[in-house]
Image 1 (cartoon, helix red, strand yellow):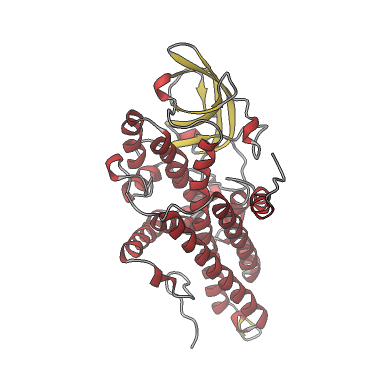
Image 2 (cartoon, helix red, strand yellow; image 1 turned 135 degrees about the vertical axis):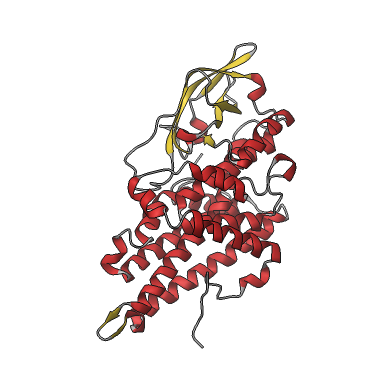
Length: 392
């Protein structure tokens, strides 16, 4: 019997591992993406346009902070639900998923996890609803994979902190009302603080001329003697543990999201191969086409099982940084390889905006680098295996 696919491949009946709430959440987000993103994304990407109206819509559909407790405006959902939301958004576009995952994992998560009750009540409901958009400032022009080397700093001025420095490659920055920023204090300890739009000396220049994540808003964060009230400092974290905890949450979402991009490329290629006639038969009838499709489905299935198992560990509070790192690295590499194979099946049509594959491929070139490069994640696993750190 021929393999049948409806909305997404499920070759190993993984749906049987999901509960009814998971399936409802996935369908709700799938319908949202089909209605609010898919009809417009190619035009947005071609024009390098960030649709600012999507922020409020993401808030309304519950895409921001799904695991944050409901009393702060979040969804109060489990981590498999969060993963499925990220998967469906990235089926639409990696840049759109970046907008949502930065808000939930890198802005709302640290405010909830490390912030004061006053900070939670002030910022989380407006971020959850999409009234405010947030961004996360860790990477600097000279410090990416080595965040401990950051030079952005704060000085205690009695009733406030004086913040100076710059952050680079910051998703959501040009549109954000709130920035979670990591900086060194006078003792060299890394601290987290909330910087708000309108604070004097705080600017967010746009980064132009991107070939990737073109529908996402990317910029810099520049701090020139910015006065930050002391109540905006996170009271419950110090050191790299703070930003790295946020990155664990974001990388987990990416491990699921990349599957969505891979599914969209696979489904596009499968349908195209069934319809494209060469030598008097569909190209799906040729052995090499079947080889490509079979390998794509195999890799997607393996990634689905990896993500599901990681989700169960995350729900139990047992998922380690190293396990999350492995899933992020594997699943993004898988998605990028599938995008490239799918592009070949479509031939010349694969490079056009009539199909989503080239857009996914370009996006994934960023995803494989951000939130920890492909190589750094490999070395995180290597260190865990050997007990020897290959980098500081």
